[in-house]
Image (cartoon, rainbow, N blue to C red; front, side, top):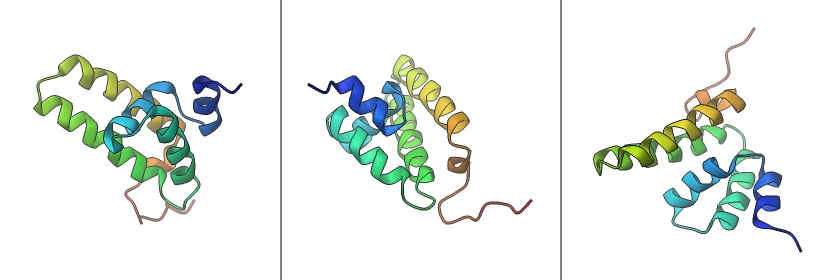
Length: 97
């Protein structure tokens, strides 16, 4: 039987990143992992996942849930380190070398 951890691993994100997306989209982690994999495969849509994680961070700070905001921030840092194309705004072209 395939586990939740296996499904998350197949999407290419960490458990924390998937949890942030699940929170943003109000869906279970397994569904969020599938959703994230789909979004990551679309052109410029790693930036869309970044926007979701940033939104979750803002909500946590506004709710004064600072420990949770810190967890989300660490997930965001990891996501940006692993997905440099997410640093671009949606629809923005990558700089030419």
